[in-house]
Length: 161
Image 1: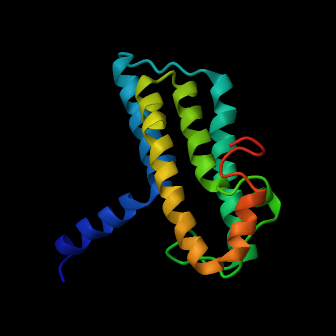
Image 2 (image 1 turned 45 degrees about the horizontal axis):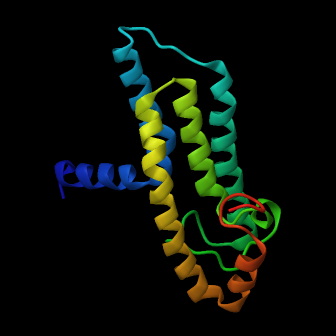
């Protein structure tokens, strides 16, 4: 194999990662877009920065916790060996995906960006679809234990949704 055939597959694989898109590609694209639209000025609403930090930290810490307690790896390509229903997973079944959405809300807020708001609005139903697929997979692995977990813990927002 030469470098030309490996490089596109490697880039495609790198880009396929939802977390890399959310936490690297989208912020860089939004910053560049808003900088260009602002004629070289970048307007930042500092009060949006905590949402960026919250979203990223929630994603990262929940993922580390899930891997440490449940085994497996990040994502469901390497599923957990045990159902994780403690920590943040006792309050929401999808804290990592929720972290993505909080981060995107922070991106839209921090840069006052209609494009970032559009990304967020696109990803809400996209993550909902993905969660439903993940739930079917987890159901096949954990069966009744997962049913009981679903009856106790909301999909997105504790006690609400």
